[in-house]
Amino acid sequence: MRYLFSILIVLIPACRLSLACGPYDRSYTPDEYHTFRICGENMSGDNIKGWRYSWRENPQMDNCRSWAKITSTDIPLKDIQEVVYHWGYDRLEKLHADAVAGKKKNDNAFANWLIREKDTEITSFLLLAKKCEQTREKQCSQWYYPAWGDEENTLLMEIVEKAKEYKGERLFDRYTLQMMRALFSLRQYNECLSIWLSRKNSFHRDVIEEMAKNYAAGACYHIGEIAKAKKMFIETGDIISYVFCINKEGKTYDSYDMLPIIYQRDTNDKRLFQQMQNIIHYDIEWGRPNLEKNLKTLYDFTLNVLDEGKAKNLAGWYYTASYLSDKLCDTVQALEYIRQARELPAGQDLKDAIRVFDIYLKAKSATKYDTDFENYLYDELSWLDQKIVMNLDSVTKSDME
Image 1: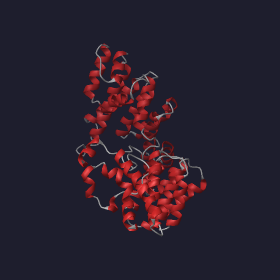
Image 2: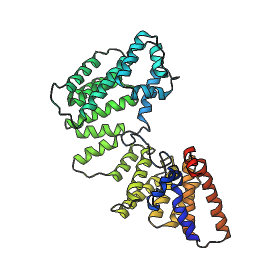
Image 3: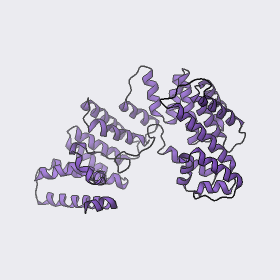
Image 4: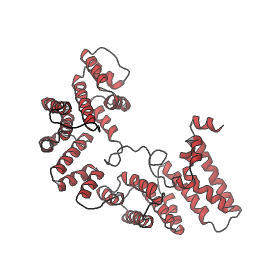
């Protein structure tokens, strides 16, 4: 009977995610469920956008907040996001015409604000930025064959010249970013870097500066200034590009090597757990080559973080240490680490993940199955059952009825 409960508990960590998929979870085998959960949607590591390229959790929304600062903080960020990122050129062109007239109303709060304020300064910029984005996307097509003087290169040169004409202060950094993007796509790396060096002091300390600095770092790489490029990529938090530079120098760096790089830059960088979870899900849990070596690498890194004591989310690190100890077949040490994790402050999702893993470890290591232990398991599984029911959406509930 004890082994039956152990098998059930191995499946526990996946229940919240698998049940949300309705009947499709039946196609999974037990070894395909993720038992380590520390971040992302449903604590699964999913839907974390752009985390490899920036220390920011969501650079896109940070940009929207930057727009709100120069317009109105009363505007919902989702409305700003819709206009800036999702509206096409034709729709922005109409918005610009409406802003010139200052008459028509719009259901989007950001667009409506621009129309009401007749803010053609911003609508003109949005048109230029969208044109730059669309032209650069065309160049990324597999059917695009570059030729000097072609439509795409001509449009990008026009964007550079138009951006240079802007003499205001309000959008100076944004126009500079578009100029650098266009020059980078034109492979005019020296000019791109020159623009950065002459204008970098005019940037605010925000996401726009970081975007521009990444292009400057890329320009440095292309003109052979690799050391400078690596330094700038580290400063902006673009670890992927940093590792790319190192690999191009003939050194072999992988996902495991990125962990100490991120940690040395910021001991509380959220990408540490994101990277750890990614490695554990797709290397460790899937049993890829060099499993024992990789486990030991992660375990040593985790213990080093705990020994230094600089990290804030200690519950997460003790949880990670417990998981890795168990994978290394040291259940006694895993139990000790999970005990410490349970005693530390953590968000509710992490608390739940820790509790689930604690159930698993205790079931796995129990020396006898008696009434006390059965009552313990019953209480814990009842709690888990309640958590599952609470997190079911209406569609899944109807499918189960």
